[in-house]
Length: 327
Image 1 (cartoon, rainbow, N blue to C red):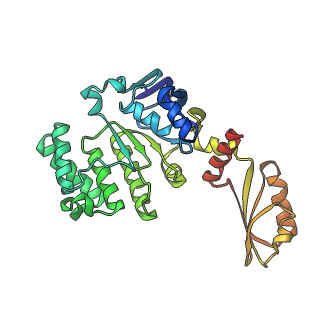
Image 2: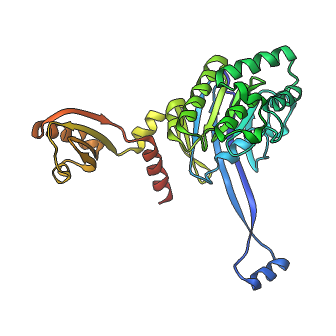
């Protein structure tokens, strides 16, 4: 089966003005403008198969959103090649646009002052959906996302969580084969984040759509993305399974202990870095290579009721990667 997304050395650079502070520098810039080139995306190559959910991770300014905008046809690249469903995205043919969607947590596609259902009807016309198909899909999405009475409310009267549910529904009315999701859970409460994650997973399973997801919430990544791509300063640092990312970049293990009696942090520090210690429960960090030795010592020397060995949280691993790349 052919990949639905293929990137070969895709790049995007911008020429931005540079000016020193002060009135004199401002006057000089009117006649002699200085600029510099910023490489937002640099030689990115990857492929995504049908049905894959891929996490696209990186700090602010890493090039994630710029890449998604090129893949959805909003930006032209400065170099390289991209193919999405066999199309060059920036040419924006109708057959291409009818098979993709882009959801950005910080952008509106719904019309602010009219009821949600009227924005849905606008999309019906844009995507040339038959009325019967449209009604069926609105009913399905209303049921899945619990839209109910939200459909008749003006968008300006919705909370952020309610609006994001409606934004996602509007983006999926035409049953796209590829979802570009840029921070779709940004600003939502924990319950709403979970519901949107469950919905994306269900849509992926039922339709076989490929998903490229950016998020700063590691819970989104852990719940949805078997594969992750880590990008920093426009370049790919890692592309592979999430479990391999943890294995490759995490130098420590987390030990969670339940003890028969309270043990001071000073005593526990003999075994590793103490993350927390209180009322017979403690969390330690130890070097990965020393895990077996430290675990044996703990069981031998302390009254341990339960001991759990785990990888550190994925957000800590990501922080380690970016810290190392910055250095």
